[in-house]
Image 1 (cartoon, one colour):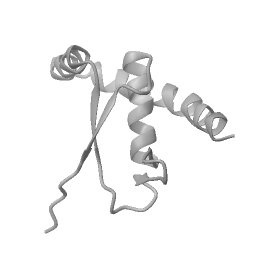
Image 2 (image 1 turned 60 degrees about the vertical axis):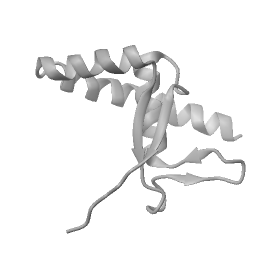
Image 3 (image 1 turned 90 degrees about the vertical axis):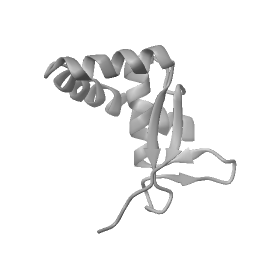
Length: 96
């Protein structure tokens, strides 16, 4: 059942992510260079913050879940046609 829920979520997120990416990439040449760099690297690096409940959480099997992770997978699916081409990096947020 979990796989179905993930596919269903991705079916909603991928078009939204693609639309957002197209708006951003159409704005200037700099984002196009960023996309080129990501494609050359072969994976999307996404920042996660395990301290924010619901955004990124590691389950009992060691898999990451949450909004940040799902959004990263959706962008990866839009860029590479593969939601698994991601690298998760713990964010270092600074507070004022």
